Every structure is written in structure tokens, then in C-alpha cells.
Amino acid sequence: MQLISSVSVGGAGAATIDFTSIPGTYTDLVLMLSGRATSTTATITVAFNGSAASFTNIYLQGDGSAVTSTTGTTLVGNASISTNTASTFGNLSILIPNYAGSANKNFSVDVVTENNATTAFEQIFTGVWANTAAITQVTLSLANFAQYSNAYLYGILKGSGGATVS
Amino acid sequence: MPVGVSAWTALANTTLASAANSVTFSGISGAYRDLRIVFSGGIGSSNASFTINGDTSSTYNWTTLEGNGSANSSAWNGDTFGSMANNYILWYNTTGILVTIDILDYATTDKHKTILSRGNNTARAVNAVVNRWPSTAAITSFKFNGNATNFTAGSTFALYGLSA
Image (tube, rainbow over all chains, first blue to last red):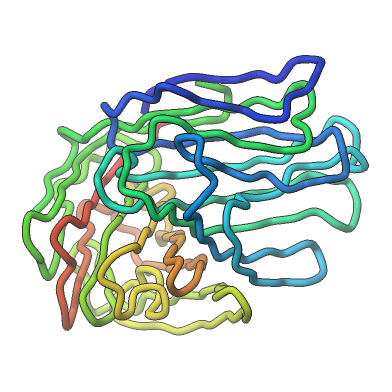
């Protein structure tokens, strides 16, 4: 697992976190985010290769009192919002296996938000981008990412040694 | 790498050139702290499962939490095999299944092993599954069982070791 690139949001905030020119040399991608919104809008959405089309998802969510399951498109989770406890950030992890392959791209997402109160979210997502192109760009959008939001993109390399497979 | 993120070492992986009924990781080194296993692909017409160290006699108890986009459910059961993600994720889907499996402290000999799985299938549901393998033995092999059907050609299976 190798760090490909990282983004740290500065004092002005940012509407997007963008990883571009992703090389096709890995088997899988892992994106990790520590994120907080500057507004009360919590939703983080994703685009691959600049496209927000052809996404489908199902997610399961608990907010501290209720459990719900919903379908959607580009949503990949919530961030902690401006009214949550100060200095708390949500965590989000996206796994995209076979991101450079020629099949549709399936991915999973695990999310928690942080808030020292009765409402905070835990979410799990299954998503697919119905597109056979290799993923070379991943963009996360939020209104807006607050300062100190950090994102890391890792590439996973093929295995050798330590076990055999048959 | 940021603090708190463990290093993943790729131990083995395979992409099926043709459909196969099982895939086994064996000779797993005990040099790591945790294991992560990733399956991405499809299975023909039934559910799949797993077995650890070839153990098909112990009862692997499991609990699931699942959402299909409109309804939520939770279930518990015990079988002589591990529940890879449960039937609803895997059943009758030839593509588009993604399952991640984490096994903490897999090489220890002082505890039963807990297996945490996340099942993903946008045509079906999303879920989280926990299994317990009731053995204190170190895990040295992990087998995916297609049971009544096969994993489809092009499916990928990857094994990673996580170190502190």
C-alpha cells in the first residue's frame, strides 16, 4: 500500500478535494478522508474522471436513534458539520478494487461522523460506477470542506510472498 | 502514511482465468498483526462461504446487519462454515459483488478468531457481518467455497497482511 497523493484543506476551505492523474499501476485504490463541513450541509459526493453520471448506491445508516436504508447515486457519506462539536471531523474510507480494469467499477465506503451529542452518523455504502474506463481522477465535493480536512489516496500493489493461492 | 493507518503488505492474489469452485490462500505467514481479504467479482447461482484451516466441523456463529435500500434487517445463525457476506449479497449475481474481510489477531493462539466482513452489491444490498471461528489456532489458510456453483471468470481474490 503506497501513498499516491494527499490533500490538506487550508484556511479558505474548499468545495472539492481532487486527485488527478492517478496512475494505473496499482490493483486497488483506498481513499481516506478526515472531513468537516463549513456549513450545515453534511453530504459528500463523488465523481470519477470528472463524471457524476452512472452512479448507483445503497446505504445503511444509523444516527444514534434510528436505522435507515436508502438508494442513491453519488452520495458517499456525511461529514461532521458546522454545528457539531468544535474540532470534530468525520472519517470516511473508500475502497475501489480493480479501478484500472475494463469492467464497471464497484466500491465500498465506511463512514462515521463525530459529534459530542445524541446525533452522529455511522454509514456503510455499496456503490457502482457503470463505466468501463480506468479511473484516473477521483473528486469529492462538500459545501465546503473546512480547514484541516485531510484526504489521502493510496494504491495497493499486487501480492507476492507470505502466502500461496490456488 | 498518516498516524493510525497500518501498512498493508500484499501477500497473494489471483484473477480467475476461468470459473472456479474454490480459491484457497494457504501457507499464510504469521508475521503480521491482522489480515485483510478482498473478493471482487461474481458467483453463478448460489451463496458462497469460507472455511479456515480446513475446519468444516466447528460451528461458525455469525450475525448480520443489512440494508437493501428500503428495509433493514439483522440475523444470527451458526453453520459449519463462515458466512462470507450472507446469501442476499451473493445470490444470483454474476458480477458486481465486492466483499472485504478483516481478521484481527489471526496468528494469536490465545483467542477465538473474529472475522469482520462487509458485503457490497448495488443490485441487492449492503451489509456487515461478523463471524466467530471457535478455535485458538493461528490461521494459516483461508478458503472461499463456491458450494453449488462457481466464482465467475475475472473474479479477483487478494490477501493482505497488516502490520503495526
